[in-house]
Length: 310
Ligand code: UDP
Ligand code: MG
Image (tube, rainbow, N blue to C red):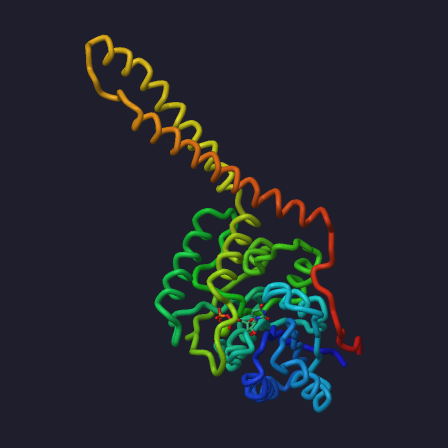
């Protein structure tokens, strides 16, 4: 049976969302009249979501469970979904119903019109704290400015990807993944569709501040050398200031000026430069740590249960 649509939903402790999510996806996908499959990736849930997923798979053979041995994180869970997908078009969607499954039809329409990446742009966000909104907005704009690929603004992972795109992405086995960036980097014909992101149906966000920072770091380090270059810029700036300061201070001394005498000036400049050096070392460390992770070449995820091949 050839599958047209593969719906990919990562799940981490979403027990109260799964039944409704499945119901709505099923309703929407049945209206297309095409064959579809729903890949539910259990990312090490501890709340019984795993059994719920198995239950659904037992009732409906279009539901294919991918069950992780532990929590590997959202981006890796989606990656596993892409690995096991068999469709001609893959749709990445959150299981908490923040991305309305009905929007899939609009994404599919653009796909039929010949676009290979159709990403969903959030025009409005409901039920999220101002801190989340503000940090998210800042994050998208920062990434846009400093990375080399033009990653669309206000766009999450909710999107449709053509088989051609997924085949390329599946060969990109980098460990610290930022899928939105990877999808933009690949190229092909891309277009956005606007939608309103609603509040979570149940439960709480699984993206605490720490995970958001990590995602942002992965995004920046995967697609830009800017943080590394910062050290060079600052080095030139400090050296420039010193070169100008030398004659200036000599002249001031010769003319009897008392400015820049004393420990405070020395201490401040030593601390400033020391701080900048340590930060630069830390930035270097971020890149080297990621290099080390890549060098180890461990698998991206470990499965407890893989879906049936057929
Ligand atoms: N998720 C996951 N692994 C994680 C964190 C989240 O699979 O480590 C899933 C989660 O179950 C949800 C989706 O990723 O289906 C998006 O997460 P969440 O809704 O918590 O993020 P937010 O919408 O708050 O940014
Ligand atoms: Mg959510």
